[in-house]
Every structure is written in C-alpha cells, then in structure tokens.
Amino acid sequence: MPQRKKAVFNWSGGKDSALALQKVLQSDELEVVALLTTINEETLTSSVHSIPIGILSKQAESIGIPLHTTSFTKDLSDYNEKMHKTVEHFKKQKVTHFIFGDIFLADVKKHREKNLNPLGIEVVEPLWNKSPAEVMNDFLKSGIKAKIIVTQADKLDKNFIGKDLNADTVSSFPDNIDICGENGEYHTLAYAGSLFRKDIEFAVVNIIQTTYDIGLSSGQTKNFAYWQAEIELVTS
Image 1 (tube, helix red, strand yellow):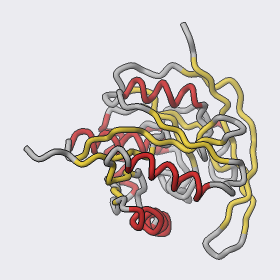
Image 2 (cartoon, rainbow, N blue to C red):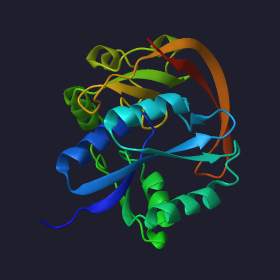
Image 3 (cartoon, rainbow, N blue to C red):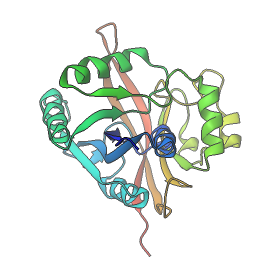
Image 4 (cartoon, rainbow, N blue to C red):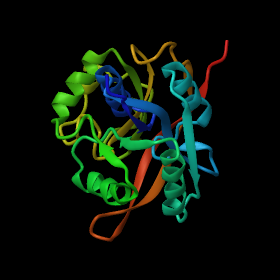
C-alpha cells in the first residue's frame, strides 16, 4: 500500500473546517499531521472566529490531531513572513499539502494557490464547488454539532448568537444571506459529533459588538460591524 502524503489542515474551529476535515479523515488519502490556526497575538484568539486558544486546543485534543498556532499582529503586517516560516516548518516534516474548508470564493482559492504553490505546497479543498445547499445538507447529515458565535450585524441579529446550527436555525435565516455564511454572514464553533472523541464544553458569557475595516477586491476598505460571542471553557 503506497504511503500517504502528509498534509496540514487549516483549522478555523467552525463547521466548514469540521466537515472538510471529517471528509479528509474518512477518505484516508492524506495523513493530517497538524491542525494549523492563525492567532491574534494580542487577544490569543483565532482570526475571524475569535475562538480562544484554550478551546482550539481542546478541539484538537478531542479530534486527536496536534494543534499548531501561528500568531500575527492585529494589522497582519507580518502575515507573509510568518506564514512563509510556518510553511518551511512543515516542509521539514515532509508536508506537501495544505487543506482548507472553502466552498466557492474563487479569489480566496486563487490567493492560497498563488502563495502556496511556489513553495511546493498543493492546496486541497474538499468542499470546493459544491453548492451552499449541498454543503449544508452534508453538514446536517454529518453528526457534527456547531453553535453560531459571530454574525455580521446587518445580516443576522444577535439573537442568533449561541444557537445550534440545525435545520430549524437554517430555515430561519433571511433570504439575503448565504446559508453557509460563505460571504462572512456568520461563523460557528464546532463542539461535538463523530469528529470529536469528547464534546467541547463551553459557554457564551457575553455578546459584544465589534467593527473591522476589511479590504475589498476593488481595493477599497469598508467597515463592517459584527455581533461576537465572548466564550470560555466550562470546567467541571
């Protein structure tokens, strides 16, 4: 039997990551040696999803794959330098593939390939080019459980924070959003299901509103407001 090629899974902690990782592990075609998560060095939370590093560590422990974090400044001015060092770190371990949970954002995929291919890393996208309805259907059938922890304020109100992502929640989404949140409408935290050996016990302790300046493909910068859960591990 040929030896499997080594891969790193780029782990956000959310539903798409969990679903894509489950598909990769079930196929058994690649050996996933680490979960890679980018971290804000000031807050020690993950980029975009703002999941505390303690919860990310519990996810990795429950999945059974080591967590590797790479921290960045808030303005991401050191992003390219840090990511290059991260890739070189994994190439020393014979890693040849980086896996992502993207669905259809072509610019994002192109950006990943542009930056990783020249370094000898192949980009793998298990969910790529499926429709949002197909991905959501796969997720709901997967047995993975996830809660909504971030919403774009002008798309989903703060009452969605803390809700489980199930058929009832999806049916309550307004018509003007992507049901998978691929355009940033919401983000989730995966905490239970067949991917995990043990449920991740956490609680939403507060909901705050935050704003971010996000660069658009046009070159312009736009300010976006979000409802964001402040979460912490529940210890018995």
